[in-house]
Image (tube, rainbow, N blue to C red; front, side, top):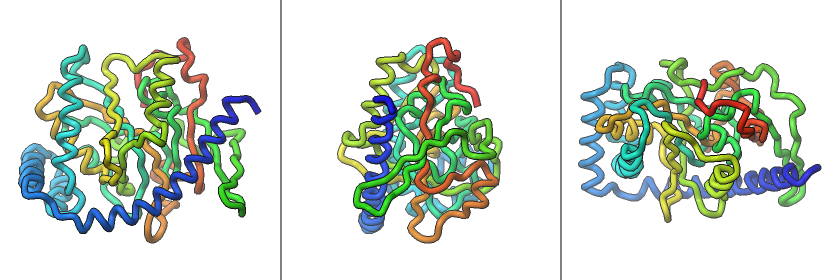
Length: 318
């Protein structure tokens, strides 16, 4: 076992421990968030933004979803997410991007046991597609983040690990698949193609200094080169914040921000999609049919071969 493999295995074990702790903390955070009242300013801004979305939405399924959830907790942080994303997009508009861009959103994430029509993550025409990279119930590494952001990662670069817990505290064994899991699609999960079919709700939470995700991304960017023109990378970093947010609210906020910009975007979601249901597990058979669903404790990383400067052009291909 060489040094890189050893470092990766140690990182995977640390991730498994952190995920277990985060799962318990998430339940407490949800309870606390539910008890925290919405400020009058946030409430008024949320209503204004949802009204704007309804005025610009062209899909009946999405319109129904917006109306039914306008007063629900789904959009409780909509105005905060709008402000966060607007500051990022305003900066990117000053750069030499084309009007059609790829936006890579980097966050921690998980799937829940509730479902949503996939097209609700493309609520307005400003988002032309939303692409998921991780199979359902699968975690990812910072190498995947870099591969997505640069457009260098292709389906053939996927490597899967399974971190199997042993009956000893903090011990586990990491299994490296010699081959990809059987029947794995040779493409990414494009929600534009999924259309009105149901998918699990995805919750995302901010990156934290102790998790090392963003530091590892910056290290890879220094070593192999940063993302190129028309690639906008947005790390979900909110100092002092750790509360999770429904990604559907972030997708809506981003689509509204893009309304007042020159950009139309394909959004690439870089996040773990591990099953963190607090009740029953998601319907694994359905998720397998929709795209692919891995076994518990599975992690996807990206082969270093993808980062070879002569490997590929860096254009993001689905």
